[in-house]
Image (cartoon, rainbow, N blue to C red; front, side, top):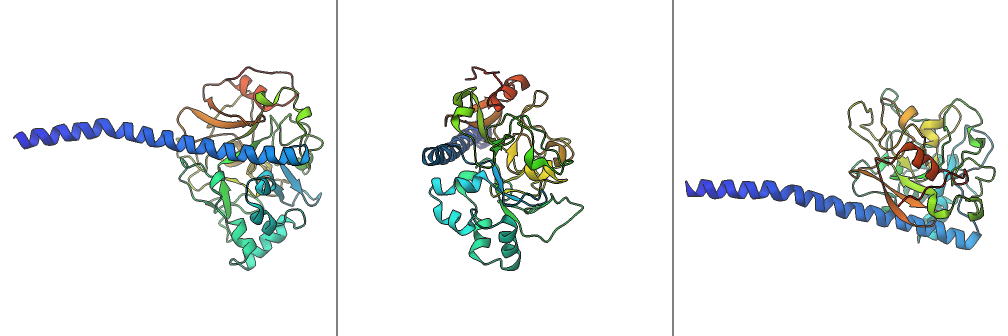
Length: 317
């Protein structure tokens, strides 16, 4: 009898301790995620120091909207102690589709290895989805009903802020979108990057990069296979695939939706910010600060934070 009492007490203690242990582990993972974002911020600001402007959000090697483009995740590599990886990808000279052709033909090639390299600073430790995106290469999003033999690419949990732009896929000119107000996409010189002087709302009041879940299993979400995953290499073709392809590199803010907005299809919902952390999403601001933005933050505040020069400044803390 006494033994049963002891066992019951131990079981009760374990039941009390387990949530605390899990909470401590998640706190550690969230801290590690914040450190990743700080590293990304250092890459951006090292680029800024060297070139006088932030890197481009994406860059097309051709004006053809059916073509993919390299993204900011590639451009900050040499400023984030990953010079060799940047050299192998050769984004200044090689087109993404040419490198994809190498990946398809010779999986063991150094270029192939680079495109599938899992970079620690691009992966949130709280997200347990696959490190490779099995649904999309530098082309249209693949769905469960359209299986593909294309080789997968390395994923990321961080996307650039494109302001309030509608990265929809109905326009053949999505790569030349009107100014959305974002820090990384949707302005006249977005192919070369924005200078700090054009972020007139203030660097400390403008989003630069935020989190993106690889997948979610919440009610109503069809994202069990990584459809929401970002791709640090860049984006797929913009024509007819704007949300699913451009959304691989960018996150959007609107007055209507906030965080962790999931729905039945990624073409509609895959371009917002989201995280595995309870209560909100971590963001890199243009001044290099990392802040946890609570998921109760209103759409109006998020919209103001996501736009660099709309005059709608907010004293977010």
